[in-house]
Length: 363
Image (cartoon, rainbow, N blue to C red; front, side, top):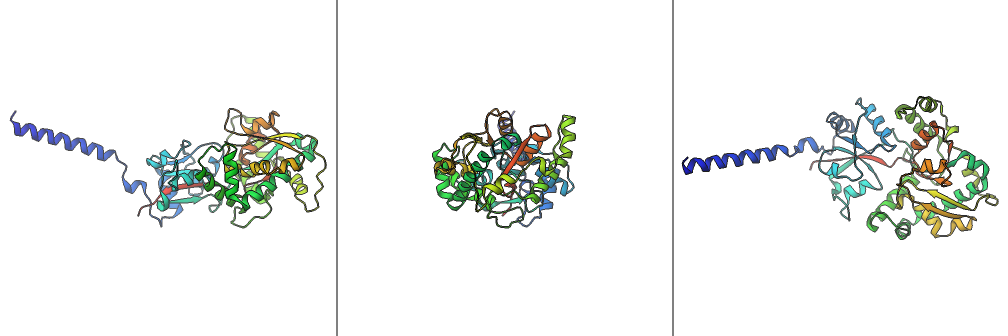
C-alpha cells in the first residue's frame, strides 16, 4: 500500500470515529425547551420520550396525576437521589423538592449544578394535583391515652415553627449545629424555601395558623391517593377506597393546643420522641428550634428527635411504638392506614406541595 493511501485510510477512520462520538451526544433540540413552551407541551414531549423522573417514595402520585391530566401514561423513570440524571439529559423532566433538589440544580455552592435561570419548573400546586406532605402524626390510640402530651407537643412544635419561619437564617444555623446532613449554604437556602411551604397554601394564599389542618387540601390529597396508590394486598386496597378524612386526621388536639386561652394540662408522658422523614435539615427546622429554644422543656416534655432515612420508616416506627410521633407525607399515612396501622395526623406543617418538575430551557 502506498503511503498516501494509508494516510487517507487513517483519516477516514478518524472521521468515522468522530461521527460515532457526535451521534452519541444527545441532540440539543431534544433536551432543551423554549422558555415560552406550555406545561402541556413539555409534559407531553418528555412523557412521549419516557423521560419523566421520580423517586417513587410517596409523591409519585402527583406526577401520575399530572401525566393523566395531559393524557399521558402514568409511567415514570426511577430517579436517583442526586440530579445527575437531569444533568446528563437521561431525564428531561426531573422531580425536585423546591427546598432541596431544586436548590442544588440552580445554585453553585457545594453539591450544586449551577444551572441558574437556565431551568424552569412545573408546580404541582399550580397544576391542581398537589398532595400534602410533612405533617405531625401519632397513633390514634396514643393520642387518646395521652391527650395532654399530644397537645403540649403540638403547642411547643408550632411555637418552634413560628420562630423558625420568622428567623430562617438562625433556624438554619440551629439545624446545622444539630448535625446537618447538607452544607451550611444549602441549609440556608432550604430554610427560606421551607418557610414558603409553611406559610402559603395550595392556592397561593398566606397561612398564619402554622400547622392547621386544611380539610379541602386534605380531601384532594385523599382523593388522589385513592386514584393512584396501588396496593398489592386486596384487603388493604379495598380499605383504601373506604377511608375518609376522619380516618386519617383529628384536628381537635391542634385546635385546643393553639387556642388563645389554651389549658393544656399536665402531660401524661413526659419523655417522648419524634422520628423525622429524613436526615437533619431545615425541612424539619421547627422541631430543632423548639428543642434548642427550650419550648419543649417549657411544655413539660423531654423530647428526642430521631433522624429518618434508616431501615425503619417513620410510619412503622410510630405504629410499633418505637417513637411517639412522626413526620411523614399524607400519602404515606393514607397507605399505612389502609394497611391497618391506625395512625392519626394531628397537625399539617407543610400547607402546600413542595414538589416540582424541573426542565432545561434554551437561550
